[in-house]
Length: 319
Image (cartoon, rainbow, N blue to C red; front, side):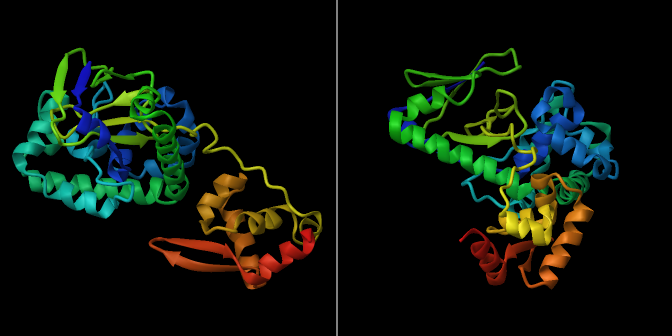
């Protein structure tokens, strides 16, 4: 059991953050033991081929059989807008003594693959985490982030309506708050008591914990908890298409036009509509060539959006 001691000032300063690096590190739990993460079976299925090309010798050494990960993979985010690039830069600069101590805290020793130069080991870790992100997270991140942000919005409303204490007690069955103490039930049998002492307690929603997680060591106060709304994350989205548009374009193209009132990538659209990525790309090309969609590049992804002509078509069919 981990217990954080909060003063009244600490309680008023509880904040939320989103960490892409935390999600990467914690996702190794689902990869190592899929049976414990049934809500992420859709993600595991869609990324299976990509994961076969990753160096699991490196990634596998970042987690143990208890599903613990070293604290350098769980940085405390400063806000819900944390960028992975910034977190990876900090990770690459981890001091040797911190790197080794965090690994020992998980494994009891430094895994063989990370012996020798810590700078070289960190470079390998950053390389593989970047590949994991680009192949298995980046295509789906807009949707995953939306779930995490929606959870934070929900918790904020709880605070406004019922207070911080009620919000803390509603986070997870593994988290309880009473009289200035936040108790976090962990798989670690040891008892730990940690005064927040003005450092601030950060709450981090994640896709990859079942109840609650916390740093292995005594770093900055942070609790990672399971985000709400994951159940429908990988389900196909029902779309009500105007019959006239569907008759002209077909159901899939009409659905694409309907949902693209907000920008989305082809991979995200494939998940939402339960259509293969290759088929989605073919339909998007046709709609774009007809002037019904626009496209723009955002990082490594191409985002599609309904054009004025596409909006007019839908409006005319429903008007």
